[in-house]
Image 1: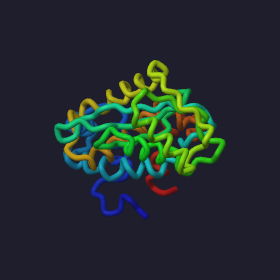
Image 2 (image 1 turned 180 degrees about the vertical axis):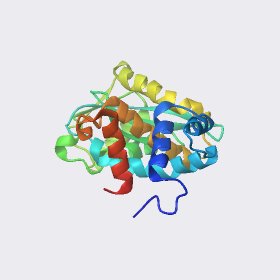
Image 3 (image 1 turned 60 degrees about the vertical axis):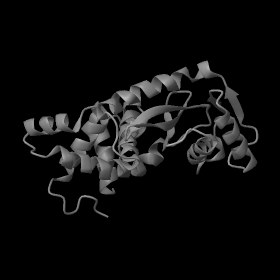
Image 4 (image 1 turned 90 degrees about the vertical axis):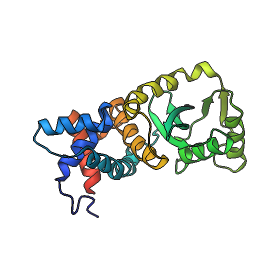
Length: 235
């Protein structure tokens, strides 16, 4: 399916805008000015619609490139972002190397949300991809969620749940770097727009962390552009 059919602008301009917005932590109006300087006259609301449509597609089509490759320990934590003036919870997991494993946005911070996130992160993984250890803080929600996962056979009964807050320092620092991209938004208007946009932010942050380097074949920025373009064009 051609995702760019009937679009007024060429696909490379649309991809250019999505990459820049999700990669550099700028506002839609700032990106509008930057594109205008390069001879592209587009309204900021159009760029917004591009991000809403194509960022989730980018995440979906590139996901298999960054799924866990080895069974290494995970750090799991949640951070806060604002949606419609209220705080919601962004659950995230990284491995011991700092690579993003998965993420999930939820309106609640409880055992059900923690279970839903961890179940999503573990889904489809081979045994050798599953973590031997998951580190969290001491929140009861994670204890209940992991017990349920073991009971239902979604993770190994031998999975070690380590609850040491200071050992999550790496993911807390990782939250901060991601939020540098999110902060210019100054709050999302709906959970739907937040989910779509954050998918774009997370993917571009993974590019920055080097999680796609193998697939860039040593081409650097050109490899990044090629990989995203090929994914969205369905190559």
